[in-house]
Image 1 (cartoon, rainbow, N blue to C red):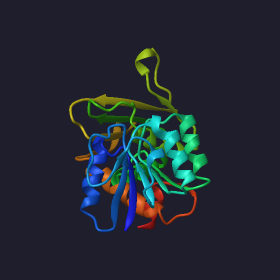
Image 2: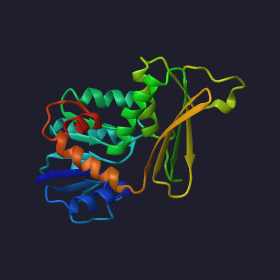
Image 3: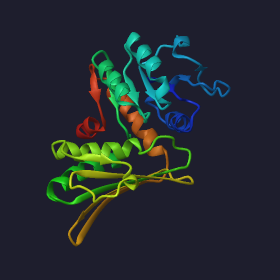
Length: 251
């Protein structure tokens, strides 16, 4: 039985993960961490990682970038594998995550959905085949999402850019420029409204033809299931940085 500490346990994703784990027989949440400690469920909830004395096997983090330093310190001090599913990190924070992975196993992904990570692989292939096509990414999320563009949109752009040897630049603010798009840019567009769970569309636009690859999430459960599967996966790994790509390849 995998013993999980859930960071951000009283947030929307935290509650979904709690429901998912409660219906599994291979994992259990033994403690939670959240700024809001008024909601206690079947496990104790703490304000800070410093207060946790409960034995555990892994941490799942669906919280906020501001928690990162305390999260990494606690995980490293207690030699606990870590699944980071929070988005909106700065480049400096991402470096801290990769530095921590030299001491403990860290599963870090902008999106825990199997479908999104398959989409990323398809985008890599399309970028190779569709030479010279213009590339645009449109992402849509609910009106409570803070970061833009989404971590998933950045993941998709990074996968494409990696396939194209890093020659692409990301254009977030085209409305401020009065000029034609360049052939080496990936346009990034964010839509926020209603209760959209998550939609991502990658457009490859060429001369007289357009290819569109897309993914639509219909509930947050797909991310919760992915995070728990990632926790099971990373709990048996040595120190290092892991992603959905490794989990998919192991299947």
